[in-house]
Each structure stands twice: as structure tokens, then as C-alpha cells.
Length: 489
Length: 95
Image (cartoon, rainbow over all chains, first blue to last red; front, side, top):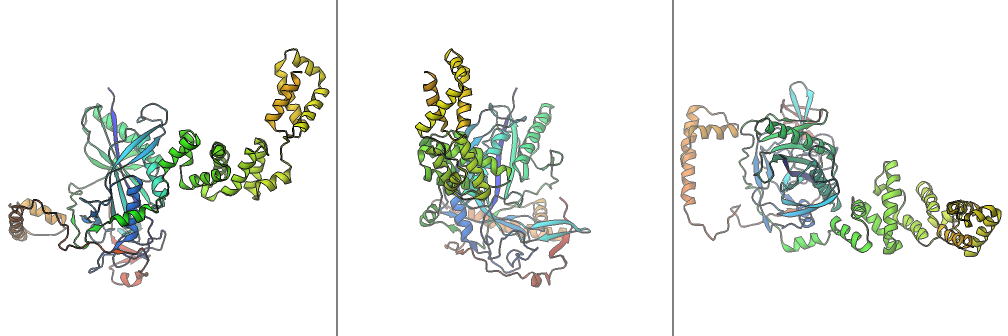
């Protein structure tokens, strides 16, 4: 009998504010230890938290992006636990009344190989429900091993605003979990609320995994903490799922636990935790009043919201007739989509497919080779659009365009100047092409006779010879047309 | 509602309070008194009354997202028990 895998995610996104959630200390990454730890961050007695408007606006923006309800009144609560990187002895978070309510995110799933592979092998679309997203503060960092028997504490990160985004357990494979995490990663960067830097810990995923027999109630889950790469996420889930299935099939039981993934061994292991580690004794923080969000605030944030990936994908498939795959590739980042939009503005919707092919093909390949992001593309959308326009109006052939593209990439300039300088303008003058065809036929009278007696395969020979005679500049479509006509006799 | 000695011991442990048996007994009596008061308040009919999360009927003032706090590490670390290389030092934490 088969097992069904059930996965839910909790993602901590660091919000891209200049200052901390409850104080005016900087949140810049990479500062000297504790130079950005002000009186509030180190919890000096007598200090009071004052909420950062920038953090609230980013939370609203996320809520709008996933179609969620924005709470008109939400409440901050204290989550109590002791750890040296949390000097207050509690984390300010939200419990009963979070700022963002239920929403949803549509994901494109690329099935992966592995024991937890989902249904079939074709890419498909799925909607994952979001339960809530709440504002909270990050903790500091512990530095181990600096001094014998002591731990160093850096409180620069303490108080950095986080939006914790909690999904329903809607995912049924590692592939779906990774697709959801990637879609969320795209959205938060797209709307500019988080830089998405996973190495620096700006986007951290906790994955809840359980297995059950289809149709039965949910199994006991284990939570894999702090995954900071999509590759590790897939490996961790695959390992964990196999472990849970093996445990259950050999008659064992799953105990609820928090576990860590070790990238070096590819295994998950249980964290040592005390029995009352999760007794957080939440209560409303008396230092903070309820957060009221007015319809005017929501509308002001809505006005700053760009067209979202899902809307763009739909527009690309409906208006431009692009495939779902092309639309997904073009919306992998906001920079890519804006580059595409700008080039389509130059060459018109009729040539959108041409622009898409070049962007997904040649441009992406070249960016990969040079290890660049589309934001750092050496060719601007204007230069790119200029080249596409010359392909579209037949000035240059596809091979000529590749030469133009290489020149734009390495030397810059405009497509028109490069076409002139390199003499890439293709010959579309019908008189000139007819002359070339006549010359080639005259020089190869024997082959013309063979062709006319039924050796059709020789057509390719004539195309090659005529193209060579034109020094590669003949318009290929036109040349084919003329050759067919003349050879027919 | 009356708390057991075990309840009080657990609360003390969660709050990292070291209490001897005499103190536990005293705290148990006081905490039980507080819970009795809560039980009395729970008996009041509050249907139709919107719950409050704060004693004052005000809402949170928001701060502009602008850096206002300078680096005062030296001043703060002057009163810390132990520091090194800009880090606050604490007894080793093992997870």
C-alpha cells in the first residue's frame, strides 16, 4: 500500500527595512559585532518598543500579493523562552491576531526524482493555501568556539523584522514543497519586501513532514528546522520521508520532534530538547498597543504593488500566446519580466514570441556562462529590442542576429551600427537573388538536370551554393522561394 | 482553582527561579489566590463585549523607518561582565 506525504512550511523572511522592528538601530548586514545593537536590542531595563511603519507596510504588501485578508486590528504577544541571543527573555511575536490572514499562492511544480516524487512527471500548477503571516523580531547570533567554555553573542540581528509565513499542509511531495518555497521566494523579492539572500539568512524555511495512508487522518509530524537552500530542502525531505516510512513499516511510531538536516551526511537528526521547551506562555505584550490598519493604509500600499508573477504569466499566455513554460521562465524574477516587457514594448506584441525565444535561449545561456543575473545583463532592453526589430523586419537573418548579439554583448553599441559595420544586412532584393540563383544554376547545369529528373535531395546543395555565393547574406526564405521556382523549370 | 506543588515547581522552572520548599508553598498559596480571582472574573457574563488586548483604548503609534540610533557599543559593553572582539561572552551554550 502506498504512503501519502504531507508537508507544510513555515518561512521566516527578513524584511528589507532600514531599521529594526521596534527601534531605530540599523539592520545593515555585515557590520562589526554589536555596533548595531542599541538599548532596545540589548534589552536595557526601561526601554520601550516602538513599531516600525516600514515593517507594517511590507507585511500589508505581502498580504495583498497573496490575496489575503489584512487584519484591521492585530496584536503583539510575548513568546517566553530563555536563550542568550534573546536578552529580554521573550520574543515579541504575534499569536491570536496576526497582521495577515488566509491567502493563497499558485505554484508551478517541476517534478523531481527521489522517493517523494509527486504525481507523474509533467510540470503542473497547484494552489497552496497560506494560513497566516505574522510580524515578529529576529534573535541575535551565537558565536561558538571563540573562547574556551564561553559563547560569544552578537545582537546586531536582534530585533530585525521578520514576517513568518505559515502554509497549510497542502504539499504532497518534495517537489511541491520546493516549488512553493521558490514561488514564495520569487514573490517576496518581486514586491521588494525581502532581499531573499538565503546565505545571509534572509529567507529561512522550516518544513513540517508527516506520512499517512491515503484517506486517513494526518500522521505525527517532525519539523526540519532552518533549511537555507532549495537543494537541501529536497534532500532533507527525501531522507525524512524515507525514514518515517521505514520506521512505520517496521512497526515503530513517529514522535513529534524538531530535527536538523546535516548537508554533509544528507541525514536528519533529532535536536536535544527539554520536555517543556515549547511551553512559551504567550500573552499580549503590555508594552505595545494593538496595531490598527486602516483601509487608507491598505490602499496606499496597494498603489505601490507591481503587476504580480501570476498575473504576468496569464497575460503572457493569453495576450502573446506563449507557452506556460515560457511564461514561467520569463517571470522567474521581476527583473527578467521587466526586461521582457520593455523589449516587447519596442517590437510589438506580434514579436513577443521572438523576444521570449531569445531571452530564454541565447540571453539566458550567455548570462549563465558569464555567471550573471539579468539585472547585470550587459545588453539593455533597448539594445536588445533594437536587434529584435531588425530580425522582425528581415534586415538580418538568424545567423546574422547571433553575430549582432555577440557584438552587443562584448562591445556594446546599437544593432543598426553593428549591422552596417559588419555588413550583415541580408539581401532581400528579389532581382539580386534571382541573379545569384541563375549564376548557380548555370555553373551546375549537370546537377540541374539530375534534380529535374527526380533527384529532389539536390535542393539542399543549391541552397548551400546560392547562400555561399551571396556570402551568407541572402534572405533564406526568399532564396528558397526563388530556387524552387527556377529549378522547377 | 487550586494549584499543585508540581504546578508551582514547573512555573518556577520555566521562569528560571530557584525556590525552596517554603517559598514554593508560599507562592502556591498566593498564585492560587490569583487564580480564584480570575475564576470569579470568568463568571461575569461578557457576551457581546469585544475582547481587549490592552487596558487602554488606544492604537499603536508607528515610527518612520529611519536610523536614529548611533553605535554605543563601547558604553554598553563597559557594564557587561565579559566581552571579547565586540562580542558579549556568556557561559557556553550547547544545543
